[in-house]
Length: 267
Ligand code: ADP
Ligand code: MG
Image (cartoon, rainbow, N blue to C red; front, side):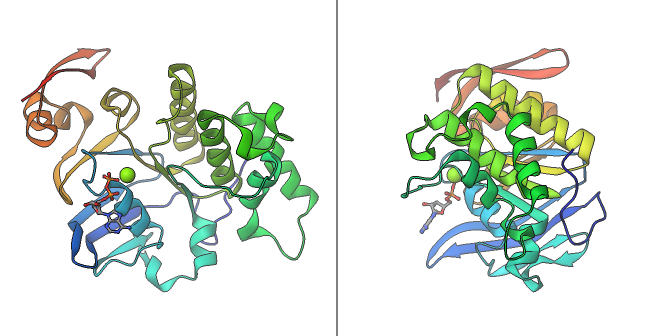
């Protein structure tokens, strides 16, 4: 069982983004973005290319420093925490992670233990790595070279690395973009279970509106760096919003109470 590795040790954290504004030099990327996510919730961030999804995730985990606004973990400002403290609380799965040197999958996942290691890794660290490899059903890849894996396999290994970190908050940048349909569902089910059973806050940028509709508790729809709509999938993923933000005519129906989106044509 993977337990909390976060210093705060509350087990049930709340993530709050308050009025975050960020520009890359003169290029504005986020404008006055505010979100709130409770423990056990999965938040899906949707929006077209360039909307600011990746920038928002990078502002949350302190890779980028917002020019205005704040990111609070249970009320504590992450800009005042050390990178090590942030790493103990937040796991981040980038869209892709260029790994130049050949490294085994086991070692890549063990890197996730870095915020918890003293001068060497313990039997407990090794056990944790094995646990997450098994949870993601990739233990068979443990001794393979990461650089030689398929995009989908690499994506799962990066998720395993973030889980080995035992975060309270898990941030994922398009975690299913390289996965086939079966693996997409497996990863989404796993994220949902982690949120429900371990009280994690899960925030994922996601392109696939149907996966977002099915697995996210709340959706934030970004457009040109601003929140265009936020709320339950049924309230946000509606034809009018999809038309305005993506420039696409779509039919939205419902299956088991969840929106099912069929994009028809660009407008
Ligand atoms: P998304 O993830 O929704 O596709 P991004 O957060 O990557 O959007 O990008 C938001 C905006 O910031 C876009 O206009 C993009 O061109 C710009 N941007 C992203 N990364 C950089 C960067 N490293 N330098 C300059 N501009 C960037
Ligand atoms: Mg992105």
